[in-house]
Image (cartoon, one colour):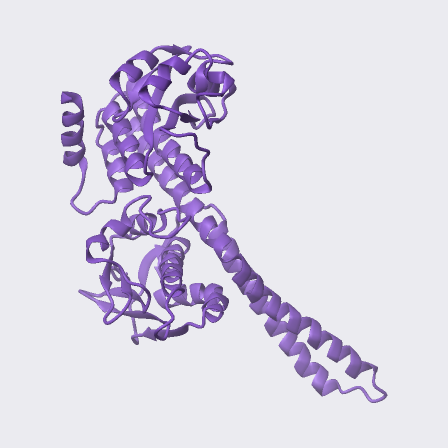
Length: 434
């Protein structure tokens, strides 16, 4: 019990007053907190966001698995697992390492992999066990991450997303500690750790961008198909005019100009999608925030029309430029706009209005605010919504706002939410001027 108490206190010392759970884990890693406390923190993070789960991390030590973190599993069970050998039928843990792949056991009572370990788990009420290897950057297995349940159960897509994100964070933490053992406090160690943190954050951001684009697939298809259909219609009309006894060249010329415009419009949509879908290193440059907003609006226009939402852009004149990464800021605005749209879908007793306002803020900075008239947010959840894996949407990942806040903070800005009177919410971020 003392270790758990010390772990909690050490975690609090590493946490800033406004850091997201995901950000606090990164802070613990960067500050060199004891690995077992970091792994316990990761397990608690999963247990807080997934009802009924008991999480565990075992570290690979030669051909054995050693206890890493398991704050909620019975101590007798944790002790029994410490030193478990790996092998083709060594329960879920040893088998996952042996195969270097995920092992899902939906029911411990019937799965043959647990024939020799069933009596170890059943007295503690453990019925399902999902094991995922934690890999190093070179593909070697470092550890295993387990999710236990007290009833037979198979993972949902959201469970799989959580596993992917937690194993990525655990890999960063474990590799950091391995690097510390090899490089101690050298400058190379510090740089590698920072690069690993940046890679992990970039990977999480990329996964979230792809998920959002997947949700927009129908709207994006509409935005591309519309100019393509116009091109086909205009081309057919031009052919008919040219085939006439007296070709109508002026009308053909006007129609060809329209074809070129529609072609550029389709190309612009595809370019915006490619920017968001491609995994690239962050590149900061002077930006016009209103251009970033317009890029996002072009992607969600069909989604707005689909749900009969009135969209208004309200931009103050002569706003200062900011220094930032265009793709990352597009991701933030896209996430806020999509959340606003989804919050208004259930509304039937009032108009659905979406306002994106940009204005000057503080000393030479800018603020972008996304107003909606949706279901709103309880006062107790205004800050919790930015936590990793916190979601009020069925099937939601709960990572979008957490990553958005990390992006804005990396740009020396701030992201927060307030109620929108009389209905809805306002999500807004501020950035310093260039």
